[in-house]
Length: 387
Image 1 (cartoon, rainbow, N blue to C red):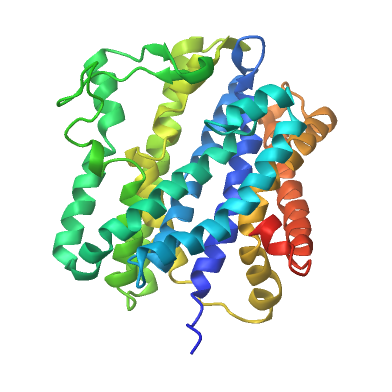
Image 2 (cartoon, helix red, strand yellow):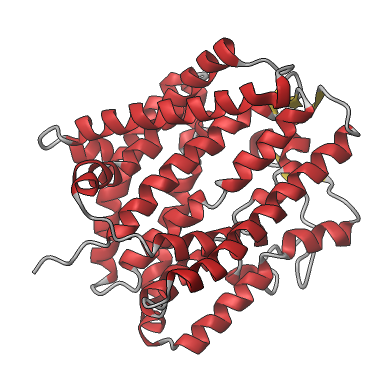
């Protein structure tokens, strides 16, 4: 008998997909310039903080959806890995090759692909992370089958404590310093905490921090999240979580930008400064975690499964992986086009900045949805292109 489809997860997937596109549509307004980071106006800083922060729970929502539907696994680990690999890897390889030719030097790009994703197509980092979680699921599934509600809450609580570590590192270091990462990519320096040292990156909380916490959130919502909450109770919990997390992420971004620029715009700096600005936008930070919890509580109340769901939401949800893989190629063109047509840094309240961001994201969403659905319907080949 075919399992009943989780309608709210389909709504969540397409929302998360749109959120990803909003995140990447915002980037040109704080990334760029000669050094790598550039904010042209005070209004641009505010719009980046507001829009990007509002949708920063996009990737965690994808992780929770995968966890909710597949964790714990109920068949052999080898079979689980085989199914996931056949679903994820063929489209990923195809689009990795596409981007290797699309941007930069193909020879250099293919050499990099032997060890990592093409940095020009930075969104592909997500696939590597997701594959890592799939390797972890069989290991944790026996525990996940037996864990009780109180115990799981305890582990999630401990994980939430680890989302404060970016702030602890800043306080301990007296500010953010920078080091150079792989291929010259700047990374925020890790101030050593609780067992970390130059010869050991795996401190006390390493193994229960990071995106694995969203695996536990998906498990909790699958096993224990209350179905019978009233709308009032849901809103009383979800909205403070979401907007509290938003205040943390947006406020921290603005604090860092205005501290560096001293409130004087246009402001340009090296790429490492932008990496520092994004500290509380990272997915292992407390603001993003709180927003994810709030968003999940709201999505769980969606039960609409009528004609619009069947003919619009469901096909887009099924094509969302392909949309994610291809969207950056579409977005780059739309971003340049709308910016040349609409952008005016001197516009009142910087309204053209918001117009460019939302126009870019909407056009990208619609074009990738249409193309992904059409490609997916190609007999025998569609699943290898889109997944």
